[in-house]
Amino acid sequence: MPSAGKGAAVDLTKGNPLYLILTFALPVLLGSAFQQVYTISDTMIAGHFLGDSALAAIGASSSVYSMMLLFANGLGNGCGIVLGKFFGMGDMDRARKATFVMIVLNLAAACAITAAMLLTGDWLMRWQNTPEAVFSDALAYMYILFGGFVMTVAYNASAAFLRALGNSRTALYFLMIACALNLLLDVLMVVGLGWGVAGAALATVIAQGVSAVLCLMFIRRRFRDFIPGREDCRPEGRLWGEMASTGLSMGLMNSVYAIGSVTMQGAINGLGETVLTAHTAARKILVVMMQPATALSTAASAFTSQNRGAGEWKRIRTAIRQVMMLITGLCILIAAVLYGCGEGFIRGLIGTGNEEIIRLAVMNLCINAPLFLPEGVLVIMRQTLQALGMRIAPVLVSCIELVIKVLFAWYAVPLWGYTGASCAEPSTWVVCCIFIVGVYFVNKKKLFGDLCEKN
Image (cartoon, rainbow, N blue to C red; front, side, top):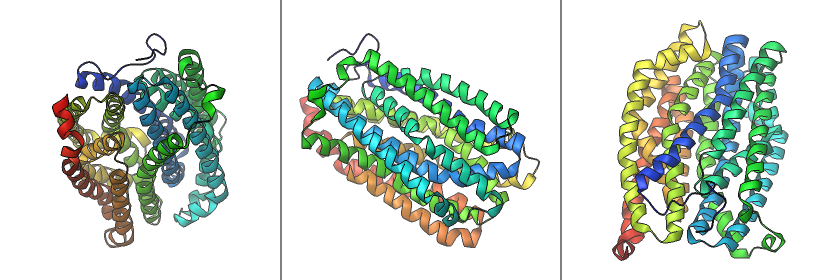
């Protein structure tokens, strides 16, 4: 396998699968945790220094931003799957061409998303029934985040590039630096300069820009073998098609169900500022608790793409079985933590004296906690099937999630209020987990049957 510099790239086709996945996943998990610091620091400072209305403004715009970010991240990770396959094959010519295509696709997506959101942001916020009391702050927060969206995509695409080559640590180091900067800028701009939620958004954009620049500088220095030359900038149509289809399918997989979240956010916004504030706080906690499954899914995807390129199908099957056992134990532990510490987390996060906000947020956590296991299995299997080249089933799962969330927004929320809204996501986890596990077992023999015997 080609070298990209000492300690830079990691071969995931040799060694104990679970050990490799765990050592890969840990930096990803820490990176995800630090990335949450971006938004959590905004939430904490807004809640403690600006009040419940500022927190509601951040929450009102978060679903639209998350939807676009999920699409961009999926695009980058999908391109990384193809790059990782070529790395596993040891084909440097196609790896360089894949890198060029990855750059073009991610840059084009970032520019298109930025333009679309800046042009339609006002309409989207009104379509979501954003309360008038927080509308101007929510719109300003969203506009600033999308104004710096190119830098956000640059960091996430760079991290996807590194992960495809087995390196999950470097992006973490740069992200740690950026998180510390974000926290300092939050204090300066929100508390010191009094710029409100706009200052919190600006701090996030600057910090993400720093992490992106550091990643790109590292790649240029340590991965010279993968930097495309002039002859690599004219890849064949088949490569464009493979990377675009894999990247777009992962992007759609991420963003289609996020459209359901946007619809659900509109229904929640209509329940008033108190419910919106409670939901924002609960979601911040739940997103953090979902990070172990997300990290394991990223690691399993990178492991699968490299081993698929090397033809090591038996290792892939073994890894899937081991990761499923691991996520079962982790999800049981996370559920116990949420039940025992959920209220303390909420109080520490937002610092509100409104007991109704606390009650509603804790209710949301208690409804979601028991069903973290199907969520974990769903997240891991969805990315693993993508890495195995199965692009349709993961997108279908996202479409199912979209339909369920829209139905809950239209019917359950008007009938049962925030209780109905809190039940929407865990319901999608159960249904979609059953579907995607069924798809895996139906296709298991086709994927591994004869090839496993050869290995």
